[in-house]
Length: 274
Ligand SMILES: NC(=O)C1=CN([C@@H]2O[C@H](COP(=O)(O)OP(=O)(O)OC[C@H]3O[C@@H](n4cnc5c(N)ncnc54)[C@H](OP(=O)(O)O)[C@@H]3O)[C@@H](O)[C@H]2O)C=CC1
Ligand SMILES: O=C(O)[C@@H]1CCC=N1
Image (cartoon, rainbow, N blue to C red; front, top):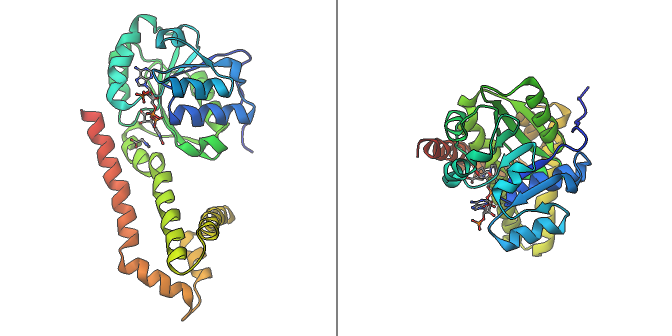
C-alpha cells in the first residue's frame, strides 16, 4: 500500500523563483492539502509572477535571502544558467538547518555542494503535471541529506504525483524523458488535433478528442498490459488503425521520439558541463 504523504505541522517551504515549475509544485501541494499556502513563500524579480503567487495565497517576499531565512526547505526553481550566481549570493544565509532542493536541469549535486558550501541537498527532476497531482519526479541525495530529508522530499512530490529515487548518473536521461516529456505529448496532441481538422473535424471537437484519447490511452497502462499489446488490441487486420500506424512508421515516429529523448538528454549533459 502507498505510504501517505505527510508534512510536519508548520514546516516552511520556500521557492527561489516563482516560475512555471514552482507554480506547478506549489499549486499541486496546496490542492493536495499537504501544505497550506501560508506555509509557502517565494521571491521573483517579475511582478507578474509575484502577483500570480499572491493570487493563490503564497507569501511573496522581497528577496531570495528572506525566503531562505524564513524557510526550512528551500527549492531552487530558477533557470540552470543562473543557479550558480543565485546560490553563491545566498551562501551567507544557507546552513545545515536548511534542506536545499534543486530542480534545475543539468545542475549536479557536487557543483551545488561547492557553491552552497554544504551537502544537505536533494536534487529532483519533476515535471509540470505536478500541478494536477500527476507529476513524475525522481530524486537523488546529496552527501549530508538524511533519511528524514529523503522522506520529506518524497512526501512533497508524492503529494503531486509519483516519485522515484535514482542514481544521479541517470538524471540527464530522466530530464530528457520525464522532465521534457510532457512537451512531446502536447506536440503529439496538437498534431492529432490538426490531423482531425485536416480530415474535416471542427477544431474544438478535434482537440477534445485528441486530449481524451491520450488521457484514456495512458490510463489503460494501469491495466498492467504492455503498450505493444494495447496497440494490437486496437489494430484490426486490414482495418483503419494499421493504415495509420503504417504512416507513423513511414514517418519514423518511434525513432523520432527516441531521438527527442536522446537530444534532450544531451542538452541536459551540456548544461551540466557549462
Ligand atoms: N518547466 C518545466 O517543465 C521544468 C523545469 N525544471 C527546472 O525548473 C527550473 C525553473 O524552470 P521554469 O519554472 O520552467 O522557469 P521559469 O523561467 O518559468 O521560472 C524561473 C523564474 O525565476 C525567476 N528569476 C530569474 N532570476 C531570478 C533570481 N535571481 N532570483 C529569483 N528568481 C529569479 C524568473 O524571472 P524572469 O523570467 O523575470 O527572469 C522566473 O520567473 C529550471 O531550472 C528548470 O530546469 C525542471 C523540470 C521541469
Ligand atoms: O526545458 C527545460 O530545460 C526544462 C527542464 C525539463 C523541462 N523543462
